[in-house]
Length: 126
Image (tube, one colour):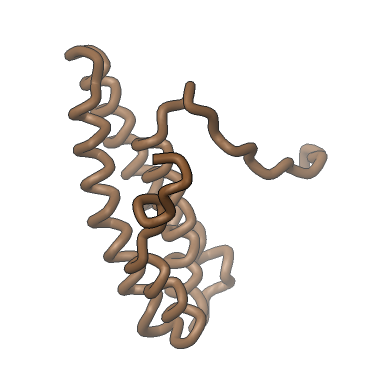
């Protein structure tokens, strides 16, 4: 599989991502919906590869809580966009970001090695 870009590249996701840059109003909902369906497949893959019943229960619980986070965070994204006409696209864009990472974590074994996450800035309490 290493080096096989046909299996590593989702052409439909690429097409929809390009559509988002050309026509966000049309592309964002389509890409979000596509990734939601892809998430369902990734979840099925994760469940099928569970080592035992306890592992499966852990995956199920994590997915349930992740979906709650996903829905709640999309609401926060709307507020972060300060309302107005950008609130809905902001929620979709942030949702797309989280969907991609969740799909990756469901189908990529940690021991395989994950790319590093971006570093975060130094923070001070408010």
